Image 1: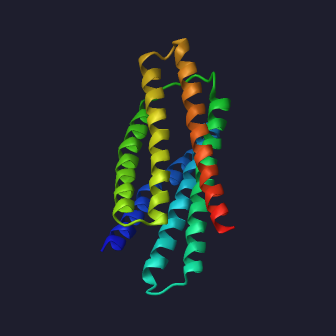
Image 2: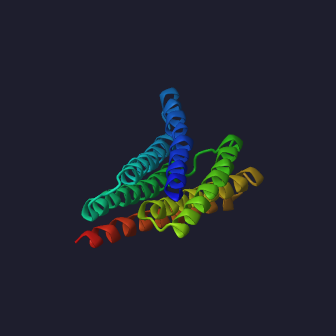
Image 3: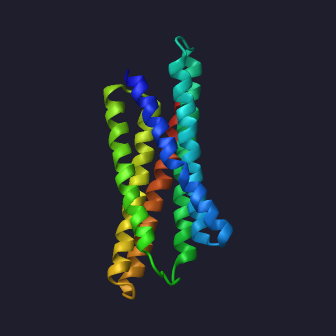
Length: 205
């Protein structure tokens, strides 16, 4: 029953994450933006990691008996994919920070609304995966919890930055809050991605 719950949660993650790259991709067709391009790469990498997680989780739960070595190999693939997605997300944020600094922000209300929705959705998924992982320890659900915590952190950082921009768009401190906040989150993402990849690779050796 808990395995079915975990599979449904992963499927819901795929469904909720799928529109992101599509919407941002359409935006890229209408206009070339370094920010949108970086966001497209980030969302696509995260979606790919979630899809791989769902496929592997479904495959493992469908099999009544499976070789332990085969199971560990598949779980390693999931963790490697999530680790790479975290690193790509962090690098994409650095790209956005460096190439978007000093650019006039314009109307950030739509972005703020999307970021707030992202905070809510990713927080709910993080709580859900954390609960499932505690009740039924599973490598795939555990790494999903890590991924959604990172996604939640990114959206919180974006939300706080955009709130400051809305309240004081021309204040000099806005630039530094944007810069420092983005770099800190980028560092967190890359570090966790590296540790996820390194930890699982060391386990295989």
